[in-house]
Amino acid sequence: MITDYAALPAKQQPVSANHDKNRKLVRWWLYAVFVVLIAIVMVGGATRMTGSGLSITEWKPIHGVIPPLNHAEWLEEFDKYRQIPQYQQINKGMALEEFQFIFWWEWAHRMLARFVGFLVAIPLIFFWVTGRLQDGLKARMLGILALGGLQGAIGWWMVASGLSVLTSVSQYRLAVHLTMACIIIVAVFYVARGLAEYTEKPAQKNVQRFAGWLVFAVLVQIYLGGLVAGLHAGLTYNTWPLMDGAIIPSDLFTNQPYWRNLFENPKTVQFIHRMFAYTVLVLAVLHVVQTHRYASGTTHARRSVVLLGLILMQAAIGIVALLTMVPIEWGLAHQGFALVVLSFAVAHWRACKGAYAVRHA
Image (cartoon, rainbow, N blue to C red; front, side):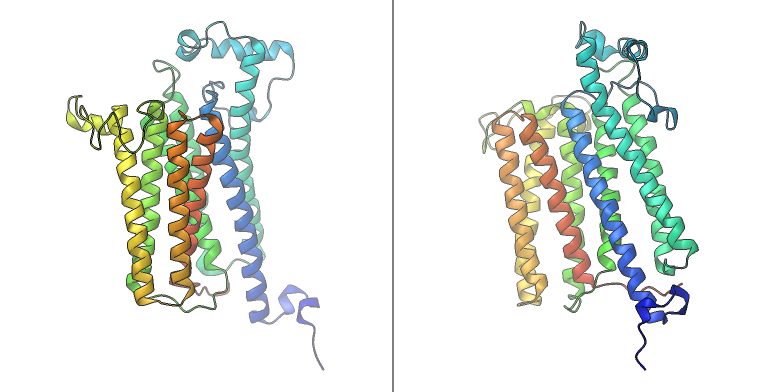
């Protein structure tokens, strides 16, 4: 007699049947989380580029879900914004309708962040208590949930930097906030891709390590991009390949002490961002050579070529954004495609390592 295992209750199905089905369910859940995380970063980028990030001057994780519902509440919220330096020094005289525009961007960003917290926590509880979450995934998922909580605190820490003295958020804190978001994206996508089925055998250890270092290099470049964004450094020196008329411009270390130029001098920060982009490109080329030497004819080698192509496309988008003085559409394209590069680099790294084996709970 042939038994239709899929029709049986979960507890009566063979472990192998449950195992495969549960891995697939968890993987698709993580893909949903991944998509929402990408949306959060993109809305965050639009929030920054529209100057909306300081429009909500309080952190109310629960009460803040409800926006102003009438004219009096809008005036109350607007009055709070008018107390901070950004309004007093940059947006003085702003109409209520203009404030509402920037308010909705920041509110949407925070709402998406709250939503993804529930999207992780509620299914995690369900999968855990029903025995669908394999043992090896439990610590990983708790770690991702903890990173999400930490990111919420970092987000408010960033906003708070622009409420008393500065007219925008600190570039230090903006870069940390963006990079932490990308680290969470890496973690979620890495775990999800580890649950996929791979027909190609894992690559050699040296190829795996290089693929991992490429992910790290892309994260570093995104951090540097966060510094550029925080300093509005992309609005200056809008030429390429020369910068201020030279390959290596002068006056890169005018501030004292010297290390402050790496984070606070817009010229130096943009120059470093440019140079590290070339570094990432060279690393990608070397990785293509490596994979074709040690894994010729495999999917790993083909993926390395695709990754190189994506990095070249991202460089081209960055150059266009620079030459056009970073209009919002090109700024968002540059940020969004950076996430494409990062995600593909993670998928390539995970594929080089192969799917990990986790024991069924």
